[in-house]
Image 1 (cartoon, rainbow, N blue to C red):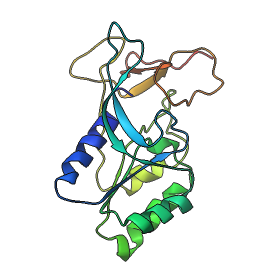
Image 2 (spheres, helix red, strand yellow; image 1 turned 45 degrees about the vertical axis):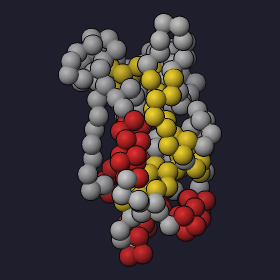
Image 3 (cartoon, rainbow, N blue to C red; image 1 turned 180 degrees about the horizontal axis):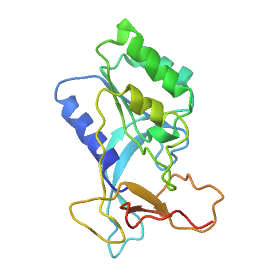
Length: 189
């Protein structure tokens, strides 16, 4: 979190627009922050209590690989991007694997952005470990640690600030902060 994953994804998609590529972006149903777009946030200001949208890109919300396949067939994209990859259903790993094996999609570029670890430092349950195993390239972005503020950025972990562990895998940012491995500690029991 706070490393610029969505911002980097959107930046790449804006660059790809210049090459006249057909781009389709998917986001998981669990991401309810914006209806038909993915966006990166801009920092809070003194006068504002919430983050402002910085960059955005149109997106389709999907809850199943079946819906994703229908969109893929109808749009025929050159680039398929998926934001918040950790929140897609486990069945999406088979969807991506089939795309990679299908000669029809040989020239399809697939870009998936998301977190690889939970706030406890474990691999995210779901398809993200499989996405990473199938990837030709993995770029890990780091944030500035909210605790030690070390520069250059070293924070690669997410710290869950609340003691209540009802749903420690939430979408949103008010309950989380970026931490380096030194400053990270497991959330309270």
